[in-house]
Image (cartoon, rainbow, N blue to C red; front, side):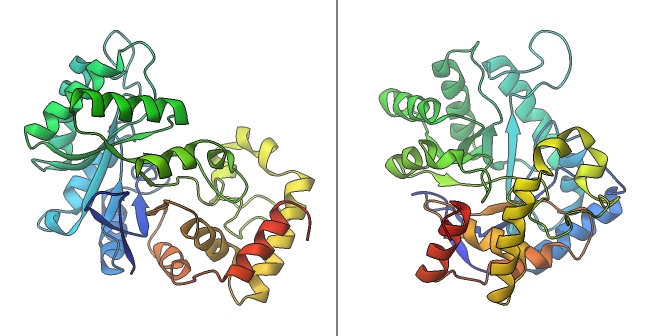
Length: 313
């Protein structure tokens, strides 16, 4: 397993990270979740990403790492809605202080390695949020800070505010980013390069479209995300996207790899990407992602992929 520094911080994370959104869903109860966590660690994965809004994921993870807490880097999140009513979402000091204690309890730990703002809260001054987060670092409850689903200008404002006030700044950003969704490249990635922030892409397989399990004309697999979340199929399973999928699949096979391996290897070749967040719904799946991380794209392969993605090949 390769390890990279998270941005310009001294924290080293595995290039493959385990996501926990499936924990507690579709048969992934405690026993299977624990097996997945231990399997990932055996493969050298040290970064595990979760959230206070992923159902029982924090609790499942806390039980799974009993006795091996020192072997993992835990990233969790705050600010998404947890319930109806006032102060049940957002990035206010009240909500952050309340939720960090709950996350620590769920995870059965006295510190969180990376604490991330899950979404932007336009109703709370960023100074209030950053001061609350900085307090958690100074108290030893949190080691590093990050954010998810922030735009480039919001990241830049947060970083500049932290610097101006002498507060602990972000070290990472989590955007949706993959071969077919490259909006982050316009502004966000240059922003991260300028500020030295590591990128942790989620949905690396475009919600499973790049996993290799979907084929034009074939039924949607019953164990797939598109089967369980049918409302997203219309935007994904189009003729144009299947055409592109066929070309990428042919390229991957020509290189002796799968399209899943191509999708992850491509992300790991992009600027500032420190680790790719990969979800799994059963044991055995993480090994595919770990194998993908051993493929280092050559300059010629990267150029050929760019031509395919821009329809000029």
